[in-house]
Image (cartoon, rainbow, N blue to C red; front, side, top):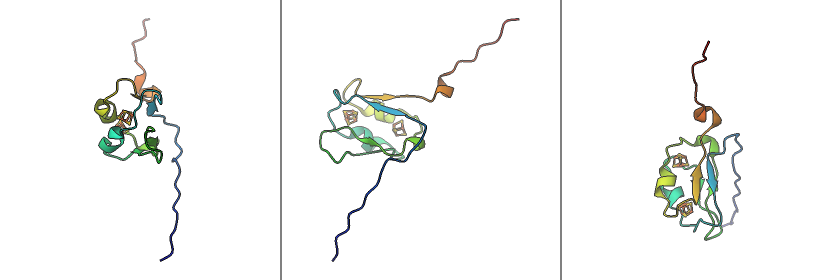
Amino acid sequence: MEKKELYTSVVSSSARPILYDEHLCIGCNRCADVCQVDVLVHSVNQGEHPIVMYPGECWYCGACVMECPVKGAIKLQHPLMNEAKFIPIKE
Ligand code: SF4
Ligand code: SF4
């Protein structure tokens, strides 16, 4: 049977929901395994942090950050619109 190699690449998006600290991450992939919408996939290189394959699909639920055993290895970055605080204008 003929062997075929399949290639894929990160789906482009203006969203950057997940930031990794490559110096802290131990590459355990627990964050990728817990993500219910498969935003993250395991790196092909053992010990490296997962790849943010589908950034536009993130629900910003925070499960990946809560699952991580290393503080600061993964950070959730909410969209700017969600970080804005609206205050009443004084007249
Ligand atoms: S915040 Fe939730 S949806 Fe987004 S990557 Fe983490 S686990 Fe997946
Ligand atoms: S759970 Fe934390 S330490 Fe493990 S791969 Fe994800 S970011 Fe790295």
